[in-house]
Image (cartoon, rainbow, N blue to C red; front, top):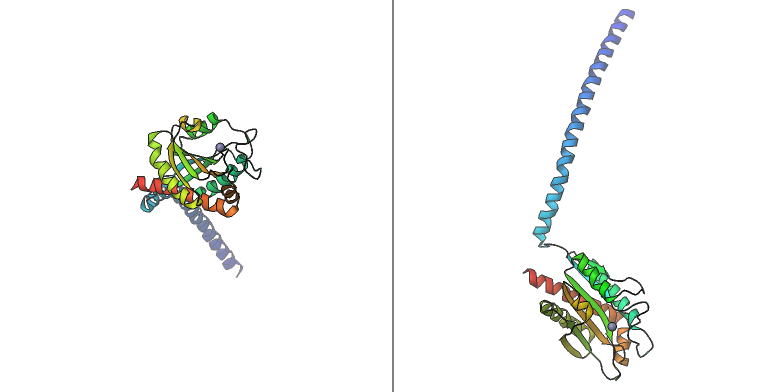
Length: 240
Ligand SMILES: [Zn+2]
């Protein structure tokens, strides 16, 4: 019984050793296979992402720079109620920025995110350095006569005219103010921009009715949506 037991033990040990060798071989082959697969996997997923985008018709992300006019030591226009333009432009620009971020076709950027002073040259430079597709400066208008009201949009380079028209069309309808049209003007930020560049005067902060609307959260949301709709329309039309 004892001798048989030892033989069985030796046989078990032999089986155990063989199993270890086989197991090591399996582990090695799995490791070798997985490292070559993981190498391939990177290429495959990158390729499928590209083809997925192609299928969806999203050719690329457009870089859009939103410029909240004025800020810091430059308060801009003073509204009827004493509110300053720098606060209005920041509130609206922030809404436009977040709406743009939600659109897969856009990469949103802003020239300022708080109440700080940024020079006109630096604003245009931010967009130029990014090689942006479009620069949109947001303002509230001012005039000595409080009866003057309405929405107007500006462009400088002729290439920006169509872009200004598409955005203005949506904007003027959304504000509900008098439509003062699209105008050509050599504003410094527009002149210094290498990309599509427009300046939007949403309404007159010096007009009591315009100002009341402009300071309301609901009107700002509607205005922001219209600006994004206009930008989107322009780039989609250009793609097709
Ligand atoms: Zn302004």
